[in-house]
Image (tube, rainbow, N blue to C red):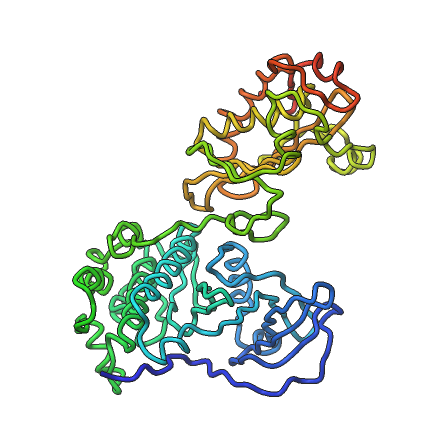
Length: 489
């Protein structure tokens, strides 16, 4: 049995904090957390919010000399694409004449490597980290992103003990696949690299990530590497031949799983879908539920009491306040129904391109607007009805509704946000936007489900009059929904 040793080419060091300085007047730089050839990572503080962040400072001159500008741009694009609770977030990118700054989530718990270096983990703990790893990597693959350097040193832990995948410096996107459908770049960390990468004949990056996940799981459960030798070439031979042995404390279930994860033939190796159906993996597994609101990543479990999450598939919802029930239940006679935000002339102009108000009701493929004379509660009820037809989850807050799909597309689940604004006392504008997912899927949903059902909405569909402060009569007798010409075929 060999001790687990750090497998990294980027040594990290601690040092005393440099003289405090503000980066572009927004972030106060703190101590050095680590460094590499082209970049240094510092702890920093947002002076406005007082939140801690990690700032990766990249030397522009070194990047230019190394011809890595395209690499940096790709890394930024990738980090913007993979926003997930188990992936370290990129908040923003800033630049000066000499530096490029990545402002990222500061993960306080440090590397998973430090935890496993003290000894193997208990099975439940190892399984939980592995489940979170698989969730994050599956999410990346659905968006055409392949990490290619998964190892405990690149897996961080937050203050709640949740895993966060970091360091996408060696990652690739599906656009880089050659005509043979494979990647050919030789990269990774020796002890975690898949045998087909060593063969240098092209490889499926998804299968390479699966192999690395298998090595990580073995390390978590065993406390040492499955393939190890002081001589790197001898270690490569063991990897290429798949020469490893599970220790006696591995259960038969886990041993079988390991044999499929560390299968040298990539065609026979487990896919991520097969991993997620494995009985050992599924114990206690819960799918991560999250959404993006106001450019912030939000976990469903972390919602405050003001927001109701209703699953249209189960018909159940979380607790909701009395004032929200008044807003959200259209068939009950209520008072105090929150009115939508009113649109003034400047708001209307801001909806359009320049001063051309014909753009107010344009459908640009990412969003559309329409006018309705129906009560707000009835519009929200109709949106819920639409969501039920396609098995979407509904999230509601005041006069905002979010419809979230469960099917994972190439760009993640389709997420649509609808917000209602008051145009006149008897008319409202409903703005619908795609917040996530594939554009083609969004357009199909709008054309086949959203528009046809909303066009049939009439105010007099409500069985009982709904009291809307000071405008009851006008609202109940208001005209049906209509789309303006630019939204119709």
